[in-house]
Amino acid sequence: MSRWMLAVVSLASMVGLAQAADDTQAQATLTTVSSIAPDLRPQNVPLDYVITPNGYFECGLVSQDAR
Image (cartoon, rainbow, N blue to C red):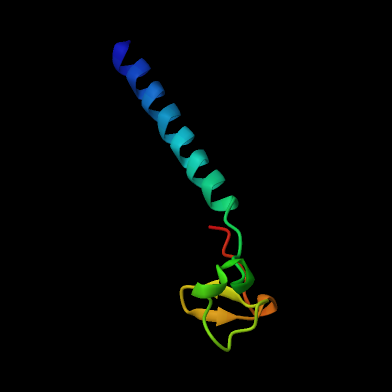
């Protein structure tokens, strides 16, 4: 009986962790160049461009992956 309860508790914990990870990713937002301090902004990049791991792009060209 105790093994059964341990299995149920373990499964419930894993489901809770998976939901917490989903909530964290859902809160991600795009960061624009205009939100950077003026002295740290890259030169010649428009203020409405967003920052990505692959560079700076127009907001309309960037989509968020909802994994």
